[in-house]
Length: 419
Image (cartoon, rainbow, N blue to C red; front, side):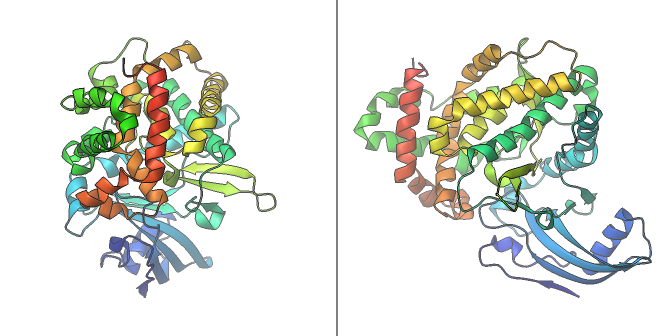
């Protein structure tokens, strides 16, 4: 028997499971994974696997499955991730993308190899949860082991603490370090990971992206204190998309001789990580990165600049950014040493120069993505933001966003970004 629990806080397309997601489908997947042809599913309870605002580029269900094998009765909690089937903006934007092929490659090929490299150096870190089943045809599906029964949770109702951010940066630094070693020693192993955000069909023409600068200019026009910044942003109105693409596609189209290039996560924000805390004192025990759909080889700066706006709160950006970036980089270099990296070790001064060289990515995120981040904090419906122009425009006039922009533009002016 299969049933679906409704959850009013879930995305609409995750309230009812598709017909093919049946007990028989899960029985076939589990019997293959456990190498138990006699496995029989007794019951399945399906419910939405995430809350509104957690994600957009997939549809996810949690399946609590009871089953029997020759060894007796068992139960397992699964996360089933698939592509949207309902007609509309989400399906249109994501169709023909490489998202699932990339994520399947990460979970079945890359992460296990990277974990082996870390383990050989004495590091038992897990970079991802177990992948139990995957397919591209007849439909794109991935089934994961559920991390919630293991004590992991997504942070939704508060900002991440500095220690939690350091936990996330630790995993990111290890992912980056092992990928740098791999690119040096066996570069062909990562050849397939070349599809970043720009390769999602129609993404660069989506109104969510294309309306950002227009709405941002309206904000600048509405506040006298922003007048001195208007000329810069007006001058890039016809070139800003090219400037953005040049940065994120640099490895493939204009590789720099001194550039630090790694396999980046690509979507390193708070809802794409789960944390496990000590039950007695709530100290962080582990952070697990999830959603590897946009992983690709690109400048190391991409994940760090993205995290600055998509992971850190305004308070952490203002008071702890330097400490956090230095923590990330020291962990990155230490991991390279630990795993026996044979090349010249990256140095922090050059890393900072490359962060500055890519400073337009900061500006792009401020007018393209940061309004949404503030909207999510205020419980705005992400689907409405992506599909309704009036909802998007309101995000640019949120008090918290305006104050954030005031601080950031003054900071960038001090650094000479607008010269």
